[in-house]
Amino acid sequence: MNSNNLDKIKVGDIAPTKFGIDLLAESVAEQVREGLVDPISIAVKMNALEQLTKLVKDKIGKDIIDELGKHPKGKAEVLGATISVMDTVKYDYSHIPEWSELDAKISELTEKRKEIETKEKEFYKGDLPIKSATSTFKITLSK
Image 1 (spheres, helix red, strand yellow):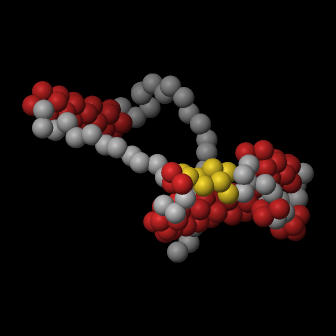
Image 2 (cartoon, helix red, strand yellow; image 1 turned 90 degrees about the vertical axis):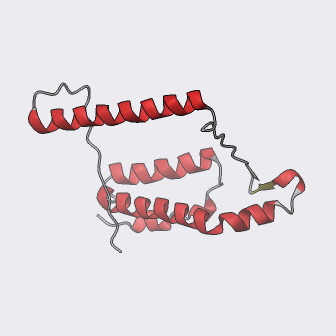
Image 3 (cartoon, helix red, strand yellow; image 1 turned 60 degrees about the horizontal axis):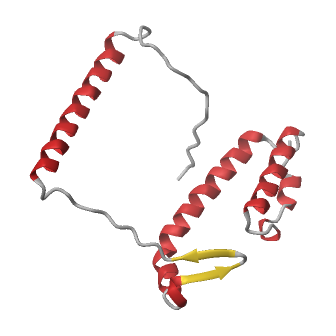
């Protein structure tokens, strides 16, 4: 199997829309099903792209926010997509005694639950009821 057909797909030629992305994904899946592309190597490549995407967003996030500040209401339309500044608000209730007590109890109970689960796994392997099991895969890129 080679990836010659896959190499001909140009991400830049696909519209950055949900439909365009689905079209590209279906094209890759079809090539895998037809045996034109090795599913394991494409999984590794897709994982690398996922990690690249996250890393680039992290590294240029401040630049994006700065650029959006130049647009009305912190919102811009680019390539048919809308990108806007989003503020995240977090509330701190720790100054309320009742909330702090409940938070402490929740932490304590969560810790007790973890201890029970660990004990059960260590001493009663095989006797634990399994609700569901699925097979998936893990990809670790080299450094």
